[in-house]
Structure formats: C-alpha cells, structure tokens
Length: 279
Image (cartoon, rainbow, N blue to C red; front, side, top):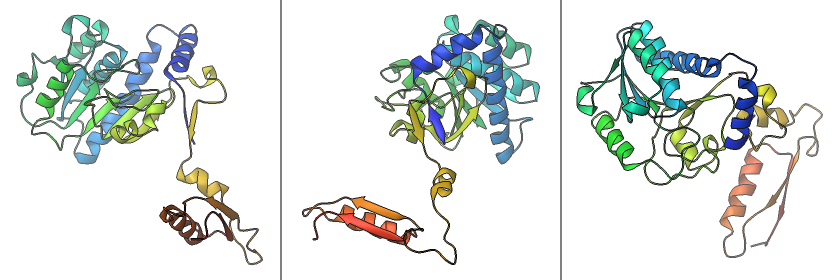
C-alpha cells in the first residue's frame, strides 16, 4: 500500500520532527537516501567511480538535497557538476559541501561537456505551483538536448508537477525515477503527474510518527490486491472463490461492460453479477 499526504500535512509533520532532531538532520537523511538511489542506478549501467553526474539545482530545499547528495557521490569518485538556476539563492551549505568533496559548479549549459551518466532534478520541490518558469524550461531543453537517453532522477517529485493534485501545467521534468522523502505525495500516484515520476523510491527520514491517520490518499499495489483475493482449494465453490459485481456500460456504450465482465471472468472470480442493460 502506498500512502500519500498533502503538502500542508507533510510540512506540519516535518516542522514537528525538526523540533526533536539536530538542525539539518532531515536534509542529511534525505541526501543520504538520494545518493544511495543514484549510486544504485549508476551501477546498473556502469559504476559510480568515474561517472559523470549533473545536478540541476533550484533555490529551495530540493536543491540542497541534490547538492549534499552530489557531495556524497563526489566522495565516491563520481565527477559531479551543479548547474545553479539562481546562484545567489542556492543552498550555501550544500554548495560548500559539494565543492569540498571535489565537485564543481558549472558556469552554464555550455560548461557541462559531453555525455552524462545521470541528471539529478532538484529544480523545484513540493511547493512548486503553476509549472516551470521559462528560464527553467530553457535550461532543461539545453541540458537534455541530444541526451534523451541520459537517466533522470527527480528529487522528491519531478519539477513542474503539482504535488497535491497531480496536475501538470506546461512542460515538466520526465524522470526515470523519483526519490521521495518521508511519505509519498499525491501527485506521485495521480495521473498525469504520475506518468512523469518513473519508478518510485521512498526514503525514510523518520516522518512516520508525525503523520496523521488516515492518509489523504492510498494506492493499492499488486501485493495488496493479491492478499485480498481468496485462494481456491479442492473444496471451493463459486461463492468461496469470490463474487464480483459489475455496474458498467450502457445501451449506447456496451463495450465498458463487456470488458469489465470478461476481465472478471478471466481473473478467476467464482461468480460475476452484472447490473445493466441486457444489450
């Protein structure tokens, strides 16, 4: 089961947790999980040592997460460069950590160089609204031009998507994977934003005890559905194997009913009951 919470709830939980942990602890936990996920992805296609990683860094905490994660990758031998959208507003501690670890800050898209092994999207975070600004869109196009096969990892959620509603206004990052922190956000589970997220990885930063019940959204996974389905045995009858009720279609559009009923029959239900026009 994937459980998601709204931005307002997540921020309240983070504020409560930050009162009980050292300053900067949550960002370091997030950065450690992000670096581990990036390392796993790099090893699938090669190795961390000697790989070329580009960080796209905005002015918020997501940019700080990306910078600290980049510092961890640089200490493992990766060549890490950061492209700062707003150099004067970038997370100062994160920039210092990256430089101390041997990473670099690029002067612009032309300073990136050739092929990249990984791009980390830390442009906007859960507070982003209304899509990406024109300068961010231009930067993305410049970076990813002729690099359409370079994997992209989004920090917390892809930049340009709405965290609460799952809406996408204009251009947004299309990630191969998204590393999210503390809990899932609704936009990671709701289309069309979910289509931009790629594979999801949840990093535990200790937020669980601060999150209320029930969650704002729950998404069943294959294992959850499998656990709910009865397993037939030698003495099973149609009722013990489960009865599926279908309310779908209409006289004008019967296709939905045909598909739903046929799917239920093929899925192994003991009995299927359809409510609707006989046509």
